[in-house]
Image (cartoon, rainbow, N blue to C red; front, top):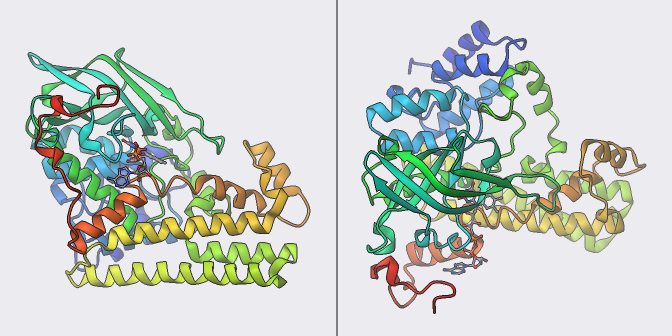
Length: 434
Ligand SMILES: Cc1cc2nc3c(=O)[nH]c(=O)nc-3n(C[C@H](O)[C@H](O)[C@H](O)COP(=O)(O)OP(=O)(O)OC[C@H]3O[C@@H](n4cnc5c(N)ncnc54)[C@H](O)[C@@H]3O)c2cc1C
């Protein structure tokens, strides 16, 4: 970095941003200049800046009015994992396509029988010369139906204890052995898919880290997943306004159009910071006249206080990090707090809306019709938030798992009795096998 990276970025934006460019062209420039993933080391197409500086980079791009980097799991999870565990050749093969948004990634970790207990996964990869043959099933795969590549965890040694027989691969999603079945959620949108593997093939050179050492590689991926959320980022795991990769078709669209779309936060209540979320409910209660109701008033104050607590907590975390320190368990605590605030807001919103809260917009037309109803312009956003509020307490480690981590790793409480992690995976009891 030069002496003032943000000044350098502003100059760079002056010279490079053009709203008439295609999204793909813009991301090519942004990524190859190191501004898409500034936290990555310089040799991995980043700029080697701290988390605090990286947040500033994002802010400067947004304030300038340019389109931000290609959001998604490639940039958030795959790139830092590859930078940590990939060989030089693997970094050169995969990272440029991530920082420029040319290819989109998904995370093929969770399975029907392995979510919180991720190390219990049973998708198999068996070696056949220079390739591995993959069979099994994943679920909850965010953005799976838009992905070009997947971060695959597969069992490569069933006779080893469960954490010691897993390997991390880069899987090509566009091959005959991969079937992606999108799942429709109660929100009406399709954020994730089931993914089935039938003799899918992955080359050994697409293996990241050593054979059977995938658990440690996966921990890097999970660390970035959790720290992203703990740092106060409200990004959902997928489903952004403008999507990278060859499938979504967004690379050919005009970049400037997405900048305008970004400036209407009320349409995406999930990304509304809690502080403004409280304001959203206060405004709504005023419109319905319920701001005089003592019970509602009490809940509005609670929502406001929680929003402020979250904000202070994020500030505290940033300050400690900037000073080179860390607060044990803060990321887990932040996620719990965010989940708690979301639930409170969900209930509050439904209380204010009453029967109208049963009306949900499943498409753009319905959204317009609901927004046009007299009196409650933001009601559809409140209902959408209520339906989406179930996601956060589950993904990236459920609330219960966050509490376990805080209990065991921060408070020093004893672990659960019985250590199943030492038994060979194929001797562990599974559903239906006693
Ligand atoms: C919106 C969303 C997006 C997601 N995206 C992805 C993705 O892209 N890729 C991916 O691989 N996965 C993804 N996931 C999956 C997510 O990581 C899992 O859902 C999560 O790990 C929980 O696993 P599970 O659903 O199998 O629940 P389970 O692990 O079966 O848990 C069921 C219940 O039991 C509780 N429980 C389980 N174990 C314990 C324990 N030891 N102590 C106390 N309570 C326990 C849990 O808290 C939960 O309440 C996503 C999930 C959501 C909701």
